[in-house]
Length: 281
Image (cartoon, rainbow, N blue to C red; front, side, top):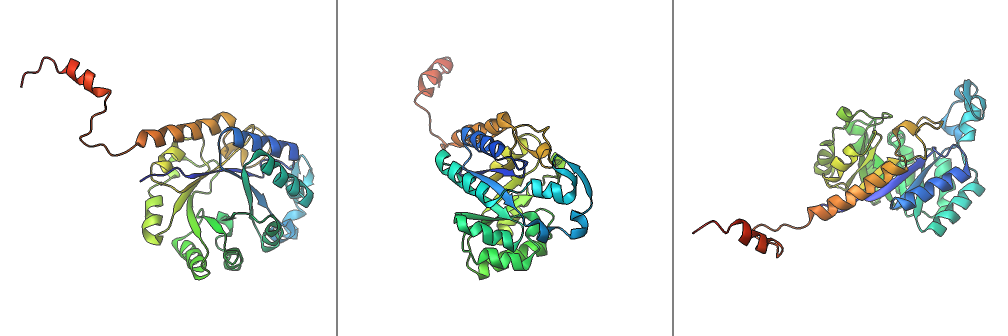
C-alpha cells in the first residue's frame, strides 16, 4: 500500500547567508505543508582546499572562493535562531553535515534525523560517525556506484542505525530522461529497506511519478525566486510549485483509496438504474 512520504523542503544554501530570507523560506515550507526543512553545514577549511579557497570567484560577498563560501555559511547564533523559529512555526528541521566537524557542531541541536548527501556517501569514516549517532538517516545515492551504496548500507546495518536510501541524480537541474525512477524499485529489492527520492528536476511531474512508486520520503530544493544568486536555485521549487506538489500528492493519495473490486458506491445505484433502464435481462 502506498503511503504519504515524509516531505522535506531542502533550503540548503539557497538562503544565501541571509537569516531573514531563511525564515521566509521556512514560512513558505509551512504554508505548503512540508513536514521538515533542511539546511547544509560545512567547515569550508575541511571541505575545500586552500588553493580553491584563494582562487578567484565573483560573488555578492567578494571576489574569492573563500568569501563566497563564507558568505553562504550560518554562524552558531544564526542556527540557534533558526532552531527557535522552526519551533515557533511548529515545523521540524535538520541539516546535512559535509564533514565531521560540522557533524559534531550539529549534535547540539539533537535532531530527529541525519542526512548523508550524495557527495558524502563515499567517505567511509564519515558514514561511521553518522551511523554511531543512531538517528534515522536519509542517504542520497547521486553520483554513486552500486559498491558505494552497498558500503554505506553495510556500515549502517553494522552499527544498527535506522536508515533509508534516497534515489538521486546529481545534476542541477536534472533532465527528465535521466530520472530512471525504476531504480527506486531496484534499491528496495536489493537492500530490503525504505527508499525515498531526492529530486533536482524542474517542475513536479517526476516527483509525483516517484510518489506512485511508494517512496518513503521526498526531498526537493526550495527557493523564493529561481532567478536569485546560487547554483541550486534553478533546480528548486518556488512557493507556487511547492504548493502544487504537496496539494497534488494529497489528492493522489485520496484518489488511491481502497481496493473495491465488485463493490458499488451508493451514489452509483440510482445512476445505474437510469442508464440501464433499457436493458431487459
